[in-house]
Length: 358
Ligand code: SF4
Image 1 (cartoon, rainbow, N blue to C red):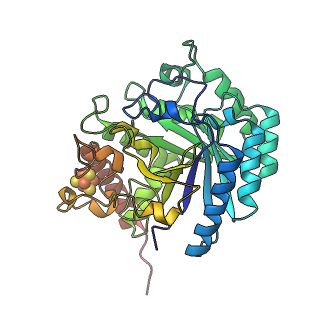
Image 2 (tube, protein in one colour; image 1 turned 90 degrees about the horizontal axis):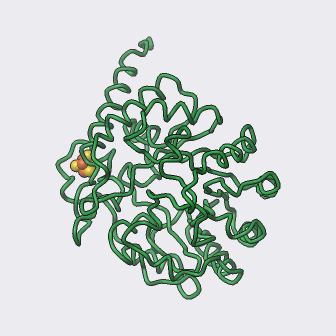
């Protein structure tokens, strides 16, 4: 039996209404998005539902996470999104999340998503200056105001899943983190720029940036920050279901609008077709596609690293260098420094705990 997927990323629409210059879907080496169907069809949705039902049953899952993604998924129209939720939800116990740039999110759409029980994650890169530096409309205008309007609709609602913030060293780290808090996100994800050894990230210390955010978060604790919590969890002996932490194989799969089953959309940074399996949902089970996945376990180059069990070699896409993924992450130094810092804080706090009398 193949790899058990716990998360399915459905590309509901293959285009976007923004033109962010740091977007890993459109601006990198893999340009196959130009050939994809714009919107996932009803036929592909039914095939996805059938394959998910088969997969969940085969692996005995009690539920599976389905992320309605893009491009910008709201371009598919709320009716198509609702159709996907109803068709898939009718055959598998699924938790649905919509990951959106927020621009098209209006009150009526929020109400529909709430009725469907779909959680909503929104991309926000910090304050207006930070956000609009990259997240711009095709005419060059910023998107900050539209996103803030959407977040006002979500604030305090149970379907608000949280914020996704792409790290930009040009932004002050603590100011960026604090700019997210007024929207009361239940969770924040910080995303490193999608880069590898052949296409390096903008220069600078990502460890310093993330460490500053970690210290601010660790002292304040206003929200969950997934990456930091995953590091702490693995340091304390737990497992991680998030790619880039721990040594468990990634448990997610991407299904494109045309039904193509892909490894990860982040592999767009490596080369054309790097994420392709050649399998299509109409003719292939997810287990058969999983057999075509790379192992993605930490490369031998990480074997001597004392943080291998926590870091796991980082995100697979970040390891690529001219023809090979058998390298440590391009963020190796940053990951090592960040995890070392987190470990020192956690160890210090554990040492300070009062002793329990036996
Ligand atoms: S810190 Fe570097 S060497 Fe250590 S596991 Fe991570 S990528 Fe590999």
